Length: 447
Image (tube, rainbow, N blue to C red; front, side, top):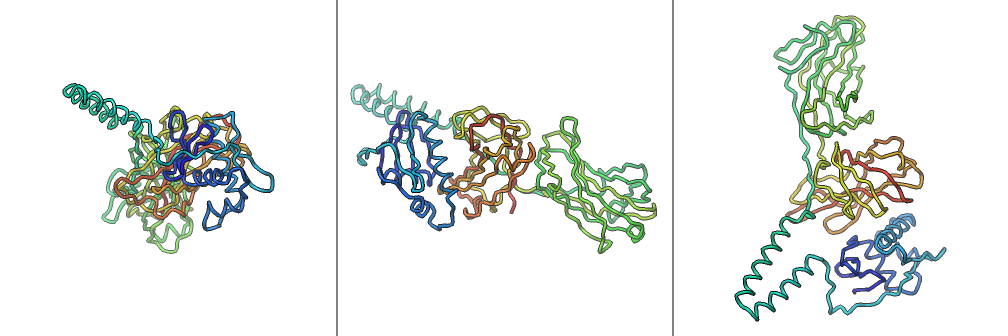
């Protein structure tokens, strides 16, 4: 069924909502289309909340808040193109109804879904006319137009795909590149780097790593062997990670005082103290161990060390916004929304085989977002059009830089994509009209 509703065309078969004047696709969100279709089919009657929830969520595991959010999102989409018209009315205690009478368009007359496709058809029709009148001119014109159109299609800036950075393990060699805060305390042995003697003051032993990476959620893994004297004299270890950004040293650490065995492996995840370090090329980070004890008689050996980076989604390229809002790339990707319908998103193109649906978004926001009537939506759109999202309200944003973990559990293996399959992921503000920049510093994929 194809409806004409005010300034919009609703194609229920193709699941497209189009702005009638420009044929721009306003939304292809399956649930949004289904919601508007239910209201259009019932016009002028009121559709109850229970009926909408039953038909929009077949499993029935949903609250009225979720329905209200869908109604709100639909209203926002419509108001971007037609702010003067009220399309959906809330009927208190009963449900919702469509205010604009829908008209059914003849299904035999297809709705043009894409501006580029319209241009292509128009060009072909003109070419056929000329070809019938002037065979040589027609053939030449056909080749010319098809060449220009093909070049435009292949080089279109709208075709932008994001990048998934696979998880990886970086091994630190234990026979070189380590330094100590005190001279002559390191010795390279067949078993690793032996630190001795350890003086009364804390001793810092570290190595360095250079290269672009986002370290939120990374695991610093160290295997060590301690002497009995080190443990008996109150020895302790502090595993640390340190970087310098714009002159500010960001530091994270884990501390270990109790030892069940002298030979052990310890894993510390870099997120305990909300350190969200993103390192660019040619910048350096430091990984190390702080050792201290009551008396300087024990020793310790670093047998192996590594950092395990989780899979992540690049925030350095491949992003786009609705309504062609300006993008900035600076240790992440940021934009300044001008409406509540604005989205910042990237599209991942298959083939990709990185399964797991728990996604950690690390954002930086301005103070204008730290209000109770404002929030941020995190969304993921599956290859089949399924929409999943999670939210954080402004009153729960305690810091300008924070991480929100979303479990998109209703999409099975969202990062297992075949050839020509894709998935979208991104953020959007919601609530009252807001002002201020939002930056995605990094997105990690946690299995």
